[in-house]
Length: 224
Image 1 (spheres, rainbow, N blue to C red):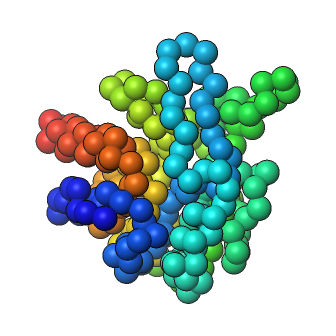
Image 2: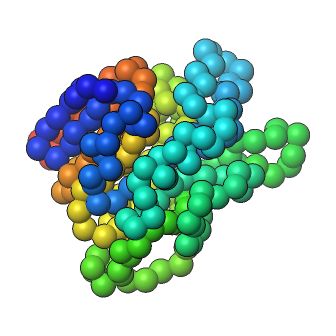
């Protein structure tokens, strides 16, 4: 693994997160791991998006949960058809308001939601200054595809920055870890909230997208 990018709040590494322990020193895990979907874009127009590395089963996800340990707080994305990681304490629902979701196209209803597994200890609503609310979080979804459009990230399963901000705002204080950085939404959201973050991404093409997005976010901020 090598340091790929660093600024005052964000540290991004290129490599397999299982081969390094740097990210495990963080305080809160917030990540969208591969969890056994074997995702392949079904796009009929243009180039199909690539498969996600390690998404053939839950082995990589479960290895990361083991490396992180049971003591510290964690939020991991998942799906109803895939078993939850060990130690789940609560399950949140992300409702994607503007999309029927991916899935079997022969079924009249699409899965317009994703699950988020809450693990670990150290959760304290009084520490965040946020009121306790229900477990359903509603935001718009985000498209994958070629990077450039504000709603296109270049990653097949991107998450909106607004969603990641809503999640991180309610986590305990400290450094955020995302060992599956993907399109960079967790890192961008953490930086937007003034939180330090450590990310790891195994594919360099996504590291390039993350750095580009971080640079654009900085540009937009300076222009306000």
